[in-house]
Every structure is written in C-alpha cells, then in structure tokens.
Image (tube, rainbow, N blue to C red; front, side, top):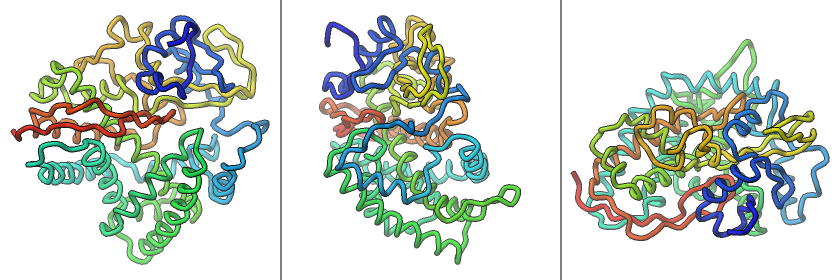
Length: 404
C-alpha cells in the first residue's frame, strides 16, 4: 500500500482487497480526488447525501472528454438505442420506473420465490455427488440466469447462447474496456437485440403469465413502453440484474466460508435468512461504486465541490464506515440488526429496481446451499473478477463434502 491513501482500482492489491484502502480514505481523505479525475466519497453519510440529492444527475457531462477510438463502436451502439433507465434522470426516469414497477409487484416476486426454490433445489440435486465445483460457474452464475430466463418466459433451449451474450455485455458496465471486450460486446449486443426482438414479437402474439408479457402490456394513465424502451429494459434485466446477484451469491458464500462461526449460524438456521442476506450485502457489496454528476456547487463532508463534477460514491466503503456502523463495522455479523441500512443497492430515486428480486434469490441460493452441503469448504483462494464497479469472485473452487 502506498504512503498516501488513494482510490486506484487498477492496483492489483486494491482489486484483491479494497477495504484497507477504503479505511485509509475514510480516515485521511474522505472526499478524495482520484488519479483518474472524478471525486470519490468513502464515508456513509457523504455517500448517502450524494445518492439522495435530487439535484444530482446520472447523465454524462456535456463537457466529457473525447471517446477513445476503440470505444467508438460501443458509443455508436449506445447512441442508436433507447437510453437505459440507469442513465436517465427525472422526469424520464420517473416515467419508466413507474411503468416497470407495475410488473415488479409483491405478487410477481412471491411467484418467483416458489420458482426460485424449485430452480435452486434442482441445481443442488444435480451437484450432489460431485466432489469439487467452481461455485461461480456451476452455481452462482446459473441460479440468477435461470431465474430471469424463467421469469421472462423465454425458451429454455436458448439459455447457452444468451448466457454467452449476457457475459460479454456485462463488461459494458465498467468504465475501462479493451478493444477485444468492445468488439465482443458490440457483437453480443447485436445478437441479443435480434433474439429479444423476436421474443417480444412472439409474446405479443402469444401472451402468457410472465414478466415479458407484463412489460409488453403494462400501462399507466395511457402511457406504455415503446418498442425501443422495451428492448432496452429487457436487455438491462439480463445484464445489470444478473451480474449483481452472481456476485451476491459468490461474495456471500465466500464470506461465510472464511468465518466458520457465522457459517454455522447460517447452516443451522440460528439467524433469520433475510437478516443474513442483508449482512452479506453489507459486508462485501456486489456493487462497489455508483456515480452522480453534480448540477450545482455542493458541500460534501465539509468540502466545496463544484458543479459538473462527477462524484463517485464508494458503496463498499460506506458499508464498513465505523462512524456509522460502530467498532464492528469490519466484522461479519449475521445477527446485526441494522444491516439492511447498507447502500449496496444505492439510495434515492435510483435505488435498484430489482433489489427485492436480488435479495430473494441470494437468500434462497445461499441458505439452501449451506444446508444441503454442511461440509462445504474452500479448496483454494478464489480469483477476483478484476472489475471496478461490480466486485465478485471469478473462480471459487469449493469442496461439497457430503449432503445433509
């Protein structure tokens, strides 16, 4: 670690374990100018202020720099498509969110709970008898992908190719991509758009009791999603909604395996599964940063920050801020009664639309895994996916032991 605190996610040591770096930033430079230009805030109260400030924007600055040459094909694709809800401010964001929320009802989530339980149990059955697995590829990736595929009512035969496209497109959530990643993402985007366009037309002809039909038919005061908005929204469900849940399952299970006493609490059901999931989300957030553009001069943490600055909120750091969580902020404690106050899903008007679904999937996937395989153990330390925004394990080899 360097002599001065720094937020540098290109540093391998930071990628491996950012939390000691966050601790120094909170202590020594909580409103920090990063080596890449943007500001980043690392304390809970400051992050919460920025996330909930209604005057901030998620749009890029009009004075943003020139796009690197190798990124131009991806930028062109973004310009040709309807903007994602992730990049819209009110009132456009409000309109789309209001429409989509009508399909993410308690009834739809409850319906998916029973389907998720069946999916998880079937997958655990298939894993039974194997000695060692990669928890990410064989389990954490499969669960949310199968859930969203089932929820949308898409043909099961298409899962392999859609998984490949989704993986390539997930990279576009990161700020830095290689030319190879850009080319793969553009190709995958074209194929995904064609596939989803065909699926949407199919659902228009043959509606069913599923999320895709619901998104097609949803209406609010005469307003509906147009074809481009619908395509953008369904694509986002695959990309953003899927990867974060993969990380929740992988990060959460790894945390339990590194804390045997907490693993035992989860395995034996001595803690509420919902509380367990909130604490796992707090302890090692699947999403590490979220950015906002200031539209006016703002005082953050006693520091004056000028309008048009991009301010990153270090969600992973805020979730371990001693000033907010107390002396046990760095500890994994599945009995923590205020764990749900974490900011892993953001806050304010851009609070994650699929938070309830992700919580439900993570809760079922992790609790049933540790109870089915009580001797679950690390085989070797996992790799880290080396991403800046979405923190997760790349390969996580585990021994299943015997079944309960």
